Length: 250
Image 1 (cartoon, rainbow, N blue to C red):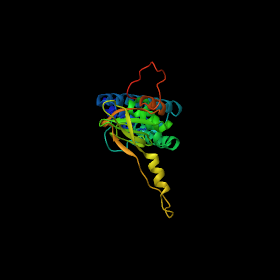
Image 2: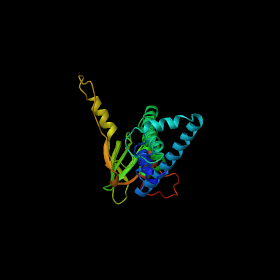
Image 3: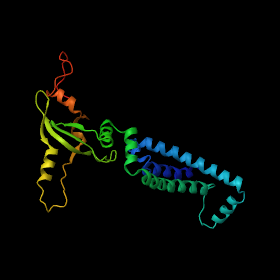
Image 4: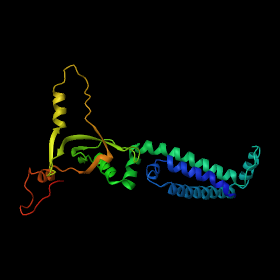
């Protein structure tokens, strides 16, 4: 088999990595050289599977392969040996990718493949946002300008696609200097309740979006929010042991 036939399955390997929902959210973190290496591995697998299937067909139907090859001779161009075996295997693998994508989307939806990729290769911040979205956990996020948001994530962005994340805040405030204790200044639930209570009787719908878009580069610290721990660190509750000194911030 001529080595230039490897170009077809290598291209197929690249398409599989880039377009398959099982791989594309993970390979976004790969270096270009690793992407090429992974494409070559998939290309070798495509060739091995193609020749294995061809061997099975020749064993079960000895006259089928020669008949197909004879029919394909009507196509007027010079081709190397085993071209059609590699071509059919390559084309079938590409078609299988898009069929499998539709099956996965139909069974699991478009969010689950993103969650799988984040749980496998996501960074700490992506995993935190995924946990907040999946488990409904509140997060406490401190920005570089000392602004603090306490809320949860409803939308999980595709990994590496954007540098921004969206949260639905419940509380917000800032860290006071020099103690770094959190001062809450805004209660979004109270604002939402006030807005709803003062709606006109003729109003049939409510459109109140309090979501906040945050640039990941501006996040200084982030973690799961616990009200009891927050109260202890900010002086609302006594520490668990009076003889224990508790730090200034969560």
